[in-house]
Amino acid sequence: MSTAIEDVTNLVVRTDRSEPSTPNQSRIVRASSLAGASPAIPRDPRLLQAEQAEYDADAAQQEAEAARTAAEQAAARAASAKAMAERSKAELAAAREEARAKAEAAALAVRLEREELDDAVAAAQAERQASRDEKLGTVRTVEIPEPQIVTVTKPSTDRFPGALALFLVRLALAAFSGIVGWQSLVDRQATIDALAYIGLDPAMAGSAVWVVSIGLLVVAFFLLVGLGTRVFSAVLLIGAVVFMTFFRFGPFSPFIEGQFGFYGDRDVLLAVLSLVPLLMGAGRFSVDAQMRLRRQRTKLAG
Image (tube, rainbow, N blue to C red; front, side, top):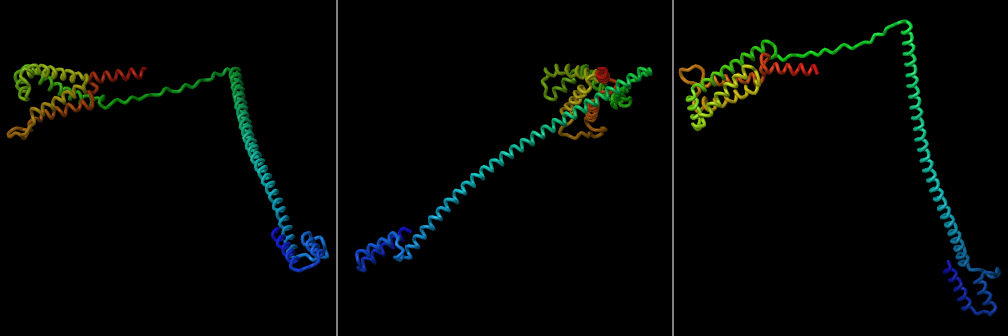
């Protein structure tokens, strides 16, 4: 805008120089062009437009400053309103929490008062009932619960058929073990030869005869009375398997021509019979059963 004013001023000056005039007229034109104070001299339209543009620019700048100030004030008011809203929200949450706590406390107090009232009513009723019974001479009976009956189911081996069958099996095993043990003790040389046949040193075989013979007699005794039945049945089973492995079976057919059954059938029967007391116990006719029954009676009494 100032550039436009300078252009207009320069144009007036050049006009003044190009057209000769009197000194007084030149001064009037230059003064009116620069100051614009004389209404008798016409003004240049471009100078008017420049002044108007400068005025509009100043007015627009003032409006922009006013708008910016208003925007800043509006932002400050919005921030203040937001802070107030957050504070109000926090106060509302605190008020709700306080109200809930008061409601819970009131409900608890009401419940405690109701329980106290119920207890008082029950105590008063009991007192009136006792007073009336005392006046009428009524004796109130106390119900005693019936004792719980515990039914002890005996194992099937404690019944007579199972106990008898297990006793007969034990008797057969004890007889076989005792007879073989006695024969080994009487005919020591045959036993030594049998042990040497499987590769045992003859000097050691002489000592092993006593161990085998006395061991079979001990097994027979404990199987007969039924003490440690499962343990000694397992010992007899292991002995029968070892005997069949080293003396009965080998790289030959167990079926011998002219002989009934097969070679080692008696030892197989002995091993199977040894499994019966090993798996089922000794039965009622045994020391093991009596010890078991004694432990059960002690447990029930305690």
